[in-house]
Amino acid sequence: MKNEKEVALLKQLILSRKTDEIKRILSRLHPADIAEILEEVKGENKKVFFELLDLEKATEVLEELEPEERIPYIESIPEMHLVKILENMSVDEIIDLLQKLPDEKVEKLMAKLPQEHQQELNSLIKLAQDSAGGIMTTDYVYLYDNITVEEAIEDVRKFGREAETIYYLYVVDKEKHLLGVLSLRELIAAPRNKRIAEIMHKKVVSVRVDEDQEKVAKLISKYSLLAIPVVDTENRILGIVTVDDALEVLEEETTEDIHKLAGITPEDDILLTTNILGAVKKRLPWLVVCLFGDLVSGVVIDGYSAVLESVMAVAFFIPVLMATAGNVGTQSLALSVRGLATGEISIKNVMRFLISETFAGMFVGISCGAIIAAVAALWQKDFHLSLVVGASMSIAIVISAFIGVLIPLIFYKMKVDPAVASGPFITTIIDVTALLIYFALTVTFLGIQKTVGFGRF
Image (cartoon, helix red, strand yellow):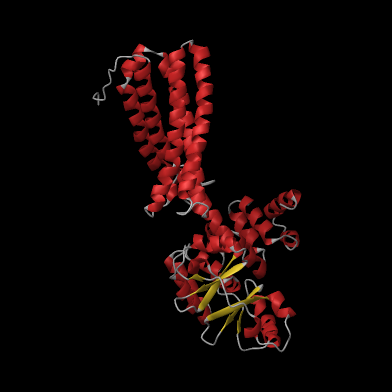
């Protein structure tokens, strides 16, 4: 925030209803700062605050808010005033907003918008939210290939004000087939009498309207673009996706992956939610599944209860063994999921990554195994036990690293989101594996009679 004192002052002025002073301060603030202040304003004061914004500022502030955060203001604004705000908003922002409103409200608002807006919105609102068409804007500048540079500059002056960006100028024919692209800089620097077809770049990176939004964002990142054109099956340009929309997509996708890795149902409003029941519903199903998974570890320990009765010290190292192996598996899982999401890991280099992580796990395992063996020897004064603990730790870590990489790769190969192979699931598998290794080595090397039973349940 630019000035925290200014924010505190605004809150006081809202309470005292000093509207002239509030308007004076608001006129100096950036829409993003106003949106941030709105998050701090409570109850009825939100409506009072928002009504003090002029039409242009109100539009810009709404665009700064997340789609879900706009709903309280939309519901409090008089319908005709809201229609004017919508007319000022970019098409992709209107779509985001309408998709969060009830159908009845959408129909009422659509009916009051100009006819050309209605036709455009009706065609775009049907597109999938998570596709290129769902995040594109139709506010862009295109040029015909047969006009001169001088005519093109006039077109940019005429239509550029309403465009989302004018840095890229897309070249089309009369049927709007995408033919090429040039930058504003190239246009201004070109001789005035040249035809656009002579100076345009014919190789254009574009995406289909039904392309997944994450792939669109990756293409923008890969080629360092400020925007990418969206085309139909016949290569007719329909709109563009800008870099700011791509950044939002990447943020959403990363947040979703993190939620899945943590075993939380991905939702936009997971943070700072006041709906306790909703928060419980998002987390409980995953935790219940993992609870039953962890019971398997209990069954394994119960099956080897004779081992624990013979050498009680064996039990002392179970927590550290399970925790360390689980941590290594989670680290490998995070690297795998992130690598697959960013495209760093692909079919071409998957074996190299798998081998690399396994060897890394081997070196980590040997190091941790040596440390825990030394601790066991000093603590329990039992050389054989220390060897078993150290060997178990080393083997469990290597296998954990391997599992943490392998499971996301299997999911990816099966066309399932690798993030679904979340931390809790991996941890459950690794816990059971680590216990089985530990008890097997204990029985083998400590000379304990093999009285193992899993039939108590």
